[in-house]
Image 1 (cartoon, helix red, strand yellow):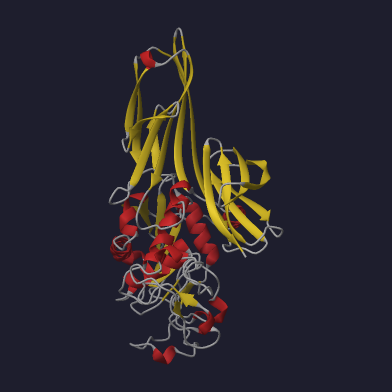
Image 2: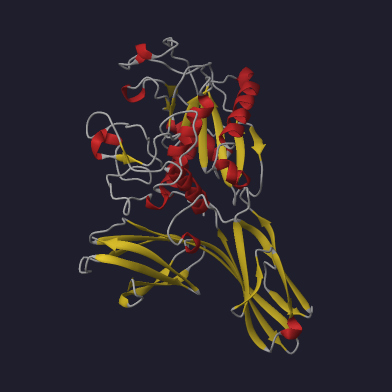
Length: 470
């Protein structure tokens, strides 16, 4: 499900109201579907003058083609749209103030420069030469608000042939020889919040999906991958507190350019895809039906975002009995329905082997429920669609368990703590969920150390997440 920041909306409104709106031409580089439902990558150039816009489009197209050819993005390429905004700068290039202590290590040497560019990309940020960052945030927000506000991921390309890049809110790179790989690495930061797998320094070290101080293979975040595809628990080095931190792989794109994302980083990227969008784009019937006299009722998934290969699985049930599996449509003979209410449900999950998360098939469920009311005069139908994503952290946990539940529509949720043998330990008061992300804090300080399940009941759906109380 797409996430929108209230703060960003407020700030964007302030900027739009206080600056002259700048509208640039927008090119479509890849289009898979409705911009409100697919993941939208927006590429902006900096330091491209009006006469260099065709060069920018070539650079943007080549860049997006490469990034989306890298696994696991290539597995989910059909989930993405790509657009390029032709941002016009007064002068060519990127700033280089030559004030970082390691400027003399750049090869080839980067000349001092101070061009007037629209987004203000500059080398030497934070005292690191290769760290190139766009500093004109007000212009960035203004351009996005006035040209493509429904973006999900922004890539900025600085028109300079020298090596550099950065992650953060906007993945930034140059158009130099290594730019494709740099962008692929930086989008790992921006899109999936991945950490560097070289040691970036004490100030950047923290618990993350691909960084941990945990050394127990049964407790580390990537425990289900340990021993597979080169995944282990590898100590960082060198300097500072690096020896206290561990990474999952020795040869990952988050450490070296020119190699693949490791399995742990790939899994995190896929989960970021799952959290952003619902693979069910359209279906029929999508609106209530009144007094249908058709004998055979058709139910279809019209448009679906399918991974490559397609790992989406569907289950169709009529009144709790399975009538279809891994198909996009079913027919219901209303002559076989008794007078009264009947429930047809379709549940879809992604069963990709690239994700090894406990109970993953219960964490991201896309569902459609049709309530079929048969009367003596025909069929009336109501439709209910929902999507549920649930996660817990930290795990293992000491006293406070944080629960995140994302739903497409308001729902009623019941949480329970259950022992390994299925016995109820204690129930948490049922709570209404609002559309979007819901956070719940569960105090388990009085729980005896051990392994438990957090059981969530949302409507007809129930899932259990295992956690360890330390």
